[in-house]
Length: 146
Image 1: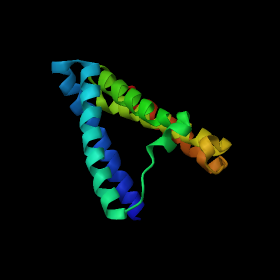
Image 2: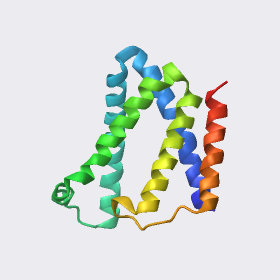
Image 3: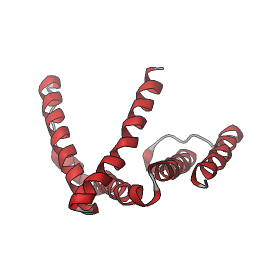
């Protein structure tokens, strides 16, 4: 239950991010706003990392991240998402953008699960999950088309 609650909180916070970034983009541009957002996030995460490292005592080896360059794509994907959201929200609306983005996430997640992509365990797409996706697509269609 705590994971459900935490997921809902993260989703609620995430819904605010592109709106805030779009407002910032009015003064420094779309790419500038996305970059500034990432810079502030980097500082926050660097501080959190230093704190956690000090508490855990686990050694950190940056070189290991570069041994598998595809792992660096997480940062690139994050930047593309922030940039895309910053661009889309003022033009397409927060509800439309997020409804379609979440739908895209869920469809990709289902494909990743179905085929065990990116090294995760395979989770087959059951008829019940397929029904959920059909209902999701119907719901998103209702949200996007006024």
